[in-house]
Image (tube, rainbow, N blue to C red):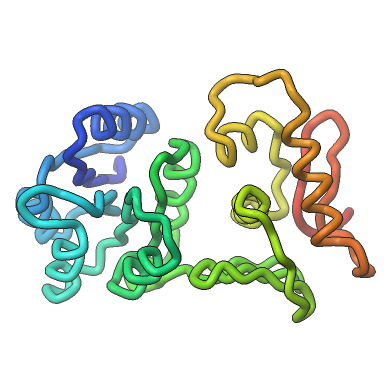
Length: 228
């Protein structure tokens, strides 16, 4: 049976893009264009996940989320928002959302996050706040990165790149995937921007530690995790 997604998004261009893309991936998708309509659909609890815009007419996304959780509807919710500050992300996650994605976003990242939410047993009540690979840890709430307890300071793009690699740890990640997922390029810019940033990130993550975590996979891309 196809999995069922509710998209609550008032911007017609964004909504059309998400609905068509998810439908193309085999999901059954319903769309609501305002908060009240979204809450009406969501409260029947029949959806596998909900994509919820934060700023909606009629009833904003946070109010919709609060009403759902008050009604004991545990359907996994991923918030989409233009508000990307730490406080806004923390508010969303601690208010009952299972994930938080800042606009503009790459569809591949939204799809990956939705699949993770749906695959988690009891995912409706879990909030992912930490990403871990060996002794490397990323706290998504305070955006703190440590390895073996030592603080690693990253620039915003480096943080996003490492977050992407952590979400795909032990997997080969191609340059094309990173261009789309981190830079939101849907074309090849013809530069070595990925290699330059990975090299810079590798120095920060691996230098001074005995076991390297960032690996080059010849002819394919990169992988974060254990070496073979």
